Length: 251
Image (cartoon, rainbow, N blue to C red; front, side, top):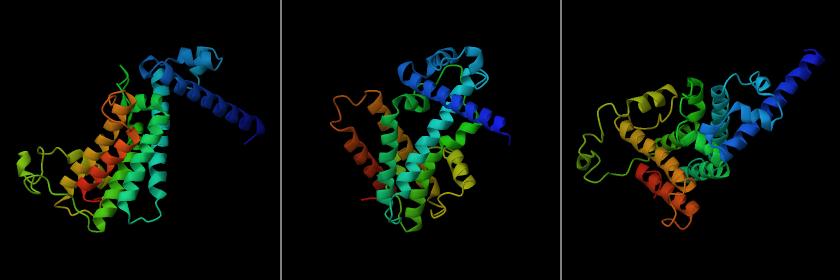
């Protein structure tokens, strides 16, 4: 590669980074729905037509922001899990992942709003955002799978493991409800240690835990816990441990 081409590539990378940094700052001040390439162009002291050479549309910029934020969040969860030296201590791994996810979200409220807040009108995330978006839940699934491979099993629901007290059969909430999640787990080779007969219920509880994780964080960041929770970090720990106990990986 010629020195001139290398310099151009480096300059493009630098400017792309400046654009993304400016856009991320505006997520906090303006919100995702109000993000505009024209405003970002002013921030980086470029004419708007020049910014379009890096991101051809607002949607392209939103997609880049989504992928970057999801990947950072996934990195945080994966690093927290990997940081637990005793891999058999699935409760510690689970709690570490929950704490890491909350820590990243609290530090990046603007990005959290893009990922889990109100959808941006007129924007539909493309398929290439799916893999980054599922990195956190894959961490949780791997932890549950490792626990089950070691003999853990879900806690019994009221009325028995069949879930009869909830009006279902074999714990099913509705026919086919978990089919997409089960297909995702099979596609990625996850939760291989679970008993096939118990897998739908295991997956159901894991998905509930995943949505509860982001629900609790959403309540915290959007001010819905005011007056009900004294310490948000301690509350998340309690929620995490209760969900772990429900899955049978914690007491």
